[in-house]
Length: 98
Image (tube, rainbow, N blue to C red; front, top):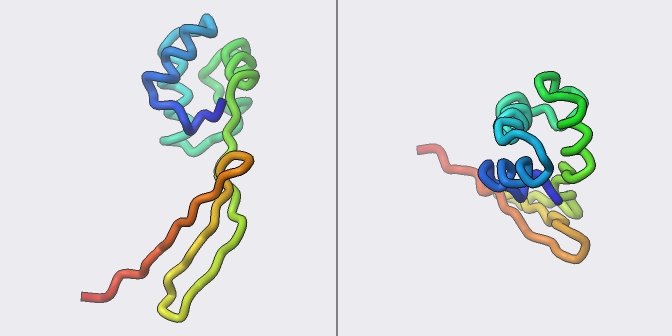
């Protein structure tokens, strides 16, 4: 199960299912979304048991860039792999100066 697919309440529910306290979900969210630390082993305010349990259930895989291109107007395009057989395209369009 991918961590990034879970809303905070979903992660709280998962923690309860795994026998962990719901506040562990908030701690995990803080590490990832506030501190930008994705390595569970560095989450020092979680018990070793909580870290082990979450590590067994969750992964932190982000989309993989398959292709990247830049057009003459500096618009950047990305083809991203999401899952095994799916991809999405993302585009960054530069703003014009006002």
